[in-house]
Amino acid sequence: MLGLTHDAAEEAWYWPDIAAEIDGDGDCDSLKVQIEAEIEKRAKKAAAIVCNHVFCTILGYSNPRLALIAYCIAHGLGGLGEKSIQEWAKKLSVTKQALSKEVTWFRDVYSLEAMGSLKTDKARIKYRKVQNERYKKPINGHDKHFGFATRNS
Image (cartoon, rainbow, N blue to C red):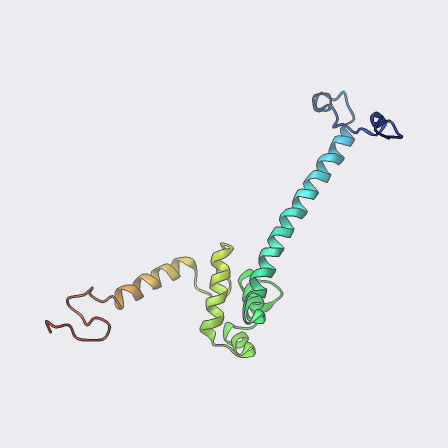
């Protein structure tokens, strides 16, 4: 029938009877092997997604070396913490602030804690609040608008 030369029933493969496995009536080792294989498959898929995200992010930078160093510093990888942000910035020919900004971005994206001399999230929030208050300008009416004096002044 339909030109098949072999019996499909001989090649059929079925999942084991889960109830029998749980009750101890079946072959537990085969179920363990299948579960481990499924976990490994899913773990590899998740790892590939993470790697794709990281590599695409880093390669998307105009300065991939800066992004890679910032990523590594943010994650505390490879002993990069032995050098200061200022030393790495000098080596990369960027400012300390530029490197720090990229490290902070990676920390935010991956929800990482501060490492070394980097500000903690709590300190960053407090510092931002103080800076916003310090440089807060009145909205139209008491200050210059776009750098020009208003008609009322």
